[in-house]
Image (cartoon, rainbow, N blue to C red; front, side):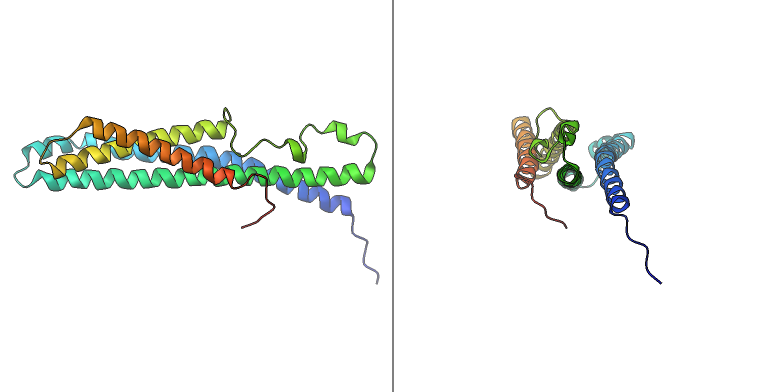
Length: 205
């Protein structure tokens, strides 16, 4: 019994729909990852203040340095989580571009096969895909939000570290400068991760 011939259009349509779904999923995941980090940080910090830990430090009969150092470690961990969130945002941005590139490959195939003026119907082509790092994009704004918050958290980590090491004394300037540096470093790393995908590479994990 002869097998029915495969319809290449059906296969290509299914592939196009799958690629479109992955592109949409990447955008949704970016918002979800960012929201999760904000909620996590906000909930944990609110829990600290709500439990009045700072009053416990002032009234502690033991060594308050241990508590200050504990705060420093806690905020350092949140800073690390901030960097991991930034790395996820970079990967999701590149995943979206890879999906768009794959869609354009299919469109170019149809243009080549059908011919005519079909290419004029497509605004986005392989050479017009938005760059991975694009100032003013939603992805860029999300990265700024996360890196700024992560910088503030690291500033708090440095502040409590000073309190623990200097027996209750801290230099606010050192804390502020440390936070700004962490913000800039994380955003630089975010941009660097995106720049590695310029020009777009057809690589898969």
